[in-house]
Length: 503
Image: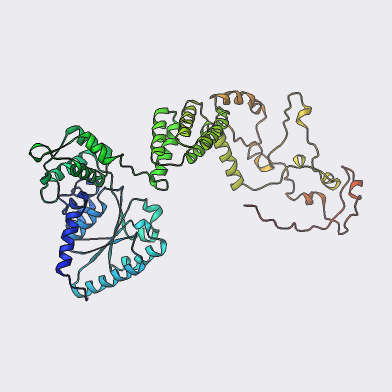
C-alpha cells in the first residue's frame, strides 16, 4: 500500500496547527481516564467501556449535542484499540472518498491485519446513496464505522445502516463536568492556559459554566478568548471577571434548530404545558423557542391547533382568539408579535379544557374506517327528480323547524350504526351548557341489542328496492308523470362510472 512519504515540512505544519488550534481542540482528552462525563455509556461495566477495554470494536452511532465529546471519544476508541483511525466529514467527503478509504482499509487488513475505524462526523449530512455506499463494507467487516450526529438517527440515518450499528446517546455535559474541564485548561502549561497565569473569578466561573449550556467546546473557546483579550496585571497575572466572560461569550450557547430534534421536543413541551394549564412553564418554552429562532407563525399555528384539540367546546371563543393572534403576529412581526403569542399562551392555560370533540371525531373516523358503508337512509336523501321520489328518496323525512323545539327524533345513521354515541361533552366551561342542551339524547329509547332479532335488512342498492331498470330511456317529461307512490319503470341495471377520490 504505497503512501506518500511525510516530509519535515509536514511535521512542522502539524506542530504549527497544534499550536494555533483553539483551546478546545488542544485540550481534547487523549485517554479514557482523561475523558470527563458520559458515565452512562463509559462507566465501569458498561457495554462500550467493556468493548474498548477488550479491544472488541463494533460499528456504532454516537448521538449527542455539540460539545458533548463525540469526536474525542471516537479518537480515543481508535487509539486505545490499536485500530487505524480514518476521519471523514460528511460536509466535505463524498462517495469517492469513501471508496478510497475502503480500498486502503482492505489493503491494510490484508497486509498488516489491522482494522480500520472510519469516523464520519455529521453523518446525518450524508444522503441515502452515500450512506448506502458505506453499508456493504460495514456488513462484511472491512471497516468499523463510528458515525457522529447531533440529529436523531431514527430520522437521519438509513434503517439498514442503523441495524448494523449500535446507537449510543451522549448527553450535554453537566456543570460539574464543565467546571472540571475549565479548571484543567487553566492549570495545563503544555496545551492549556497555564503559561498565561490566568485566574478565573468564582462568579465568572459560574457564569461561564452556566451559559456554555453543556457545550465543552463553547466553554473552552470562550475562556481562551477572555484570557487572550485580557491585559496582564501586576506580575503578569490575568484576573478574568464576569464582564470578560460576558464579552467573550456574547450569548448563551444554544443548540436549538428549527428543523432538528429540539424543535419537536420544545413544541411538545409547550403543548403539554398548556394542556396541563401551567402558564409559567408554557411561557418558558415559548421563550426558548423564540430565542432559538423558531418561526413565530409556526407557534401561532400550533396554538390554533391547541384551541381546537384541547380547549374545544369548553371555550368556543378560544379558536377565534387564536386566529386573531395569528393575524397579529403576521401583521406585527417580531418582536412585537411575540407578546401576542405570550397573551395567547396564558389565555389557553386559563381556559376550561375539553378534548370531547377531538375524541368524538376520532371515534367517528374509526367507524368510517372499520365498519361497512351502508347506504344513506332514504328519508335523508334529496329527491330533486320524480324518479328519485319514486324510489323513495326523501319519503318520511320530518322537517325539524316544523317541530315545537326544532328537534326531530328520526334515524340519521346508516342501519348498521344506529345508536352510536361519539360526542360526550364534559361539565367544564361552556361545554356544561352544551351537555345540558344534549340531554334529549339520554331520553331516547336504547338501540336494539346486538343479539335481538333484527328486522330484515333493506337491500343496500337503492335500485334493488325498485326492481330491474327499464331498457328504454324515458323521454324528457315522462319522469314527472310518476307519482310518489307509483312503482318506477323496470330499467336495466347499469354499472355506475368509477370515480377517483379527490386528494
